[in-house]
Amino acid sequence: MTPYVADPVYLNGRFLPLAEAGISPLDRGFLYGDGVYEVIPVYSRRPFRIDEHLHRLQGTLNGIRLANPLSVEDWKVVVEKLVAEAPWDDQSVYLQVTRGADDKRDHAFPPASVVPTAFAFSSPLVTTPADIRARGVAAITVADQRWARCDLKVISLLANVLARQQAVEEGCAEALLIRDGFLKEGAASNIFVVKDGVLLAPPKTQLMLPGITYDVIIELARLHGLPLAVREIAENELRDADEVWMTSSTKEILAITRLDGEPVGHGAQAGRPGPIGEQMWQWYQDFKNTVMRKG
Ligand code: PDD
Image 1 (cartoon, protein in one colour):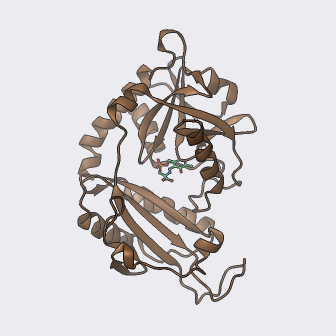
Image 2 (spheres, rainbow, N blue to C red):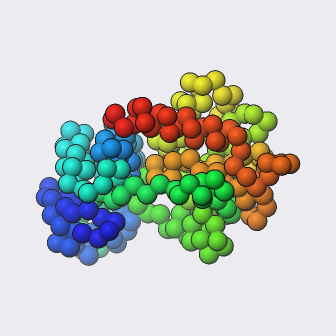
Image 3 (tube, helix red, strand yellow):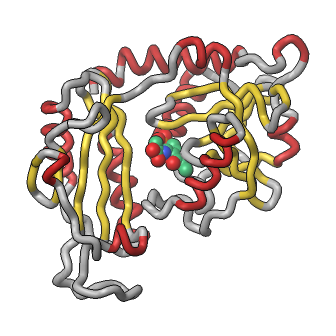
């Protein structure tokens, strides 16, 4: 076992140690990035919103025309076993399906006899340390250079990788992707903006991944009567925001307090996590402790 990946992992119907899990170099995931994935957070050994994650997985598989090698029930059994065998209570379970390995390299789909590769493993769920959360993190904006189906959770992530790496090299935690003058999302997160007490969320289009955490935030905003507008956010609105947050299954809700070197927000609040983000984080924690930890 590595400190980050629990044994056993799941590969094509078998549970085995990571060190013994091998796939063909001709696997289309390796050759073409031809595959899909999911990341499911697990709280107190209970997978959170697993039905929604498996539903999104199916949507992505449909989007790339690849049959799901496992039923929803089979996936749940796989996740249950990985979670039960891992040494941590809070985990992050990764699922991946690729179009499998043919006996040659050819862009078009392989014959039906080539079976998909299904791989899954569990890692510890690493939450953001309290001091970093209290300060918030820095982000940069970059041009969104991804393809036109960003709603599909595919493993071809090169544009996301390059954007995140640029952020890291500039001492930042995330890169915010701007396309045609509008904020879409982060390299590996959804982005929310607060302006004049209103929570702004970019709409679910083919140019943004529909985050499971995003849905929870929208539900919590509605539940608590927080003013909410789901609409496109122009780049200048992002720069003039009172608050900016990133959200994902692994990061939960994290304030972005510096953007392209400038403090986010206005007046005394500038460069500090804002009150609405703090409130949402608290709602999220309450929700986590009352609902998520109960499955
Ligand atoms: N990424 N947008 C992008 C591009 C993402 O990669 C992710 C998550 C999200 C947030 O989705 P969710 O709330 O369902 O985690 C939005 C995962 C965590 C990853 O790639 O590791």
